[in-house]
Length: 278
Image 1 (cartoon, rainbow, N blue to C red):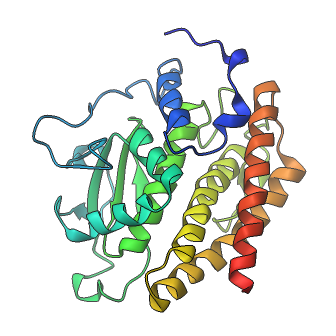
Image 2: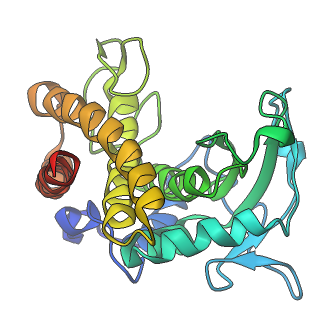
């Protein structure tokens, strides 16, 4: 595959789109990077008769041999919370397209720290990706709202991986030295700029989903729940926004990418802040 990086619309790639074009391109671009993502097609997409999510684009499958997280275990492939979370993401077409195109296999998991007896009250989700296989995502499903956020959070990570930015370093776009550490918007310790970009990119997508869930809530309880998630993420993403604005170093494509991402982020954060204070 030959793609001229200089000809790409990096500014557009920074934004989610309902058709998932940016995520599809990122998956194609992943084939050109070497190292940890060279096994990106190891799992394969949905097979005949296999359960799926996101309009048949994401296989539901146990792939636990690729994950080493002691307190987590394979979960049900047909639990109703999976469909409930998918329905929440569907309310945001751009997030739905991102998840459909960026995630290849989803492995639902349970967490020993969250017993099933608490599932009606526990909020959030723990989610993870496979460092060796692009498109493989794990997440808990005890809370549909939390899982919906995990879907777009992990899909955004996968897209950024495909575009050449890893957690510890980058093929291009971000050029800060890995030895230089900066405040993370979501982790209470300094991290390399590539990790900060990943955190900001993934949780900005979660913030955008939270806005839609507030605006489309079926009742007051759902609206209050979505607003709680939104308020927390707006506060964190404002901090991350300032860190990127002040410290991110980028190459030429990265300048275009960051311009698009920061402009979209500002739109989302302003809209989110208005909903939180309403």
